[in-house]
Image 1 (cartoon, helix red, strand yellow):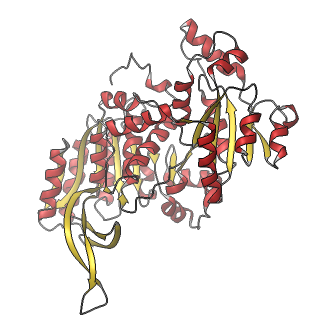
Image 2: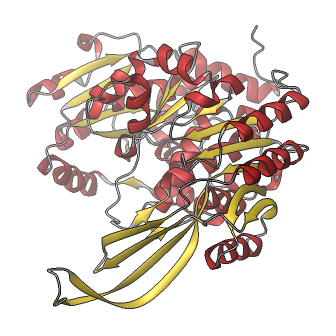
Image 3: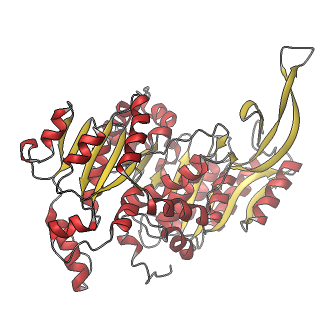
Length: 512
């Protein structure tokens, strides 16, 4: 893989920045997508009458669009984000198959291992909409997959895995990834040194049922809420209770999937990372009103696989993948997120620090929807894992998290003339890029009490070796009936140690 001297070692990157998608694309990892390739149709028109033979609306079509869907959409996202992509799957020799193959080739995707068979039907999903609302979806798929096609795909997979940095399985349960193909992939991974971190490619499984893939010991599996509930044979509750229940079932999910890590995707509630060492991470989705968006899960797993293939830490990879998914849910149809789009999305956080008056207006809108506001404050000069853990905890105390940053002048008064290391605009951009953070503002007063009195958050959260009585802000919170919450201690010496290592040119602290 390429080195990134301008940006530093990707394995040390913890926060998202505008330059990161470009650096990941420059790594240009080779990724094989194996799975259920499909063609999505988006037909739209106007409705002005009902048909005479039935009480059904008549749609006068005005536009038709076909785009790669399913595993093919995942491949398109990977290509748009800078990966060298190959696709392995089975399609028919029908018009849909020809269209799908041509679109993949036009995107620069290697279709050497995309097989066609005369007895196969290319899976298509046609959505018919009017006025921005999907009225009907028509699915056309093969009732069974020819045995000789499965055998040919299994043989192709053995050859396709060679020289790949990662393998991404997209199993929608159509029968294309039946046991012969799984065995072929297992043999191919064994040939690449499966179990040897240096020799084996990264294996990511995005499957309607990850359990049949457990013998392959995936590095990552990404079940959604419904798939998770099915594995647990239990119904998941809603909201924070759903997140908590997923966390409680960590051991069961890891055992059922055979995976080194499980990322449960919870649509509007973001994602939860589960690992055997007990380390968890949470991302939050940014709400979207687009009714016709489709394929955000494909974008998420594509960005996650790309980031991990390029050496980004798992938690940072999740945050990046969440950002990519946030991009596509604001776009109609089956969409992809490109490197440029993701960079623009992250750049938008560079100037996101709102003034107190504008922030007050935004928070009133959230309160009108019954949402609880959490506010915390600090310098956040050199962001480290203690900060991100603390901010994730703060988010879980309510619905909207506001981070108030000390101004540059305020930081100098608190920390001395050598601080801050990063100007407030840079600090705001990095903090705002975290999926758990909804708003960032800046204050210049000795304490956050004046801002608290103006914004009146339901919860004021502080991380440190404090009690509520020790905080200067506590009286301001109690004046209007708010609550003070003390979270995990984030040692100041952690930031100081990082700053000293930077100034002295030392590398990261070595751990056993």
